[in-house]
Length: 215
Image (cartoon, rainbow, N blue to C red; front, side, top):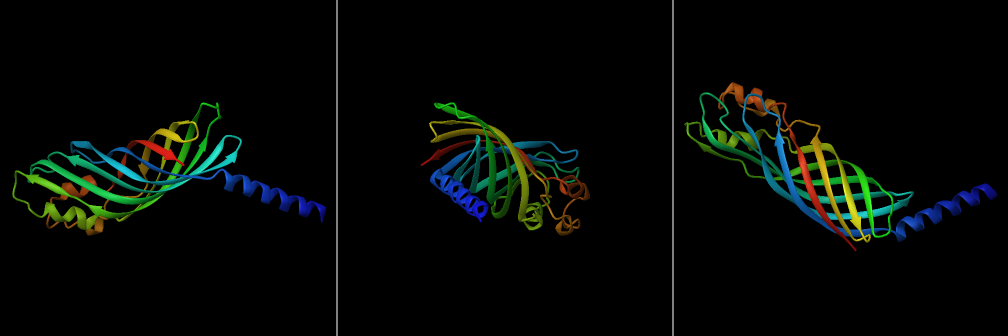
């Protein structure tokens, strides 16, 4: 009985400590992404992300930081086939993402350096796919948005530094685990076969730099 009471009391005290240390904040920054393609000149696009975060200190230098973020990812492709030449083919997708960051770092009073791992899931809610054609295949303007997979999931790894428990600056590499396109929805009658083969296994990956303000 005494052991049970002790465990309950310990759990309550730990929960109270976590609750007392909870902080909410805003986050935003720079996102640079690209995707895997074959035999195509892929260039990263410099875009952005912004949202809300909540930080929970759990002791021993560990903290959990979930968030709700709107993030825009994209890629610019060069000439995508022999039949259809493009000056610039841009794929952009805006995702609502839920990342859950696990941080660890020592508190050095004035600042706290930390490492973190951050799995995430997201869903595409916006897109802006554009192509400047030097050929005649106008169908390229619509197939990309129709064939995109809406659901995404992946992970990020990064480093950061926190100042005074209020300001965080972090840099992160991220990688999606699923496919960017559903190849069954790519109409090979409307586009070149080598386009389908080039993009079907790709997904957004890249890095981002974030600034968070905690309250």
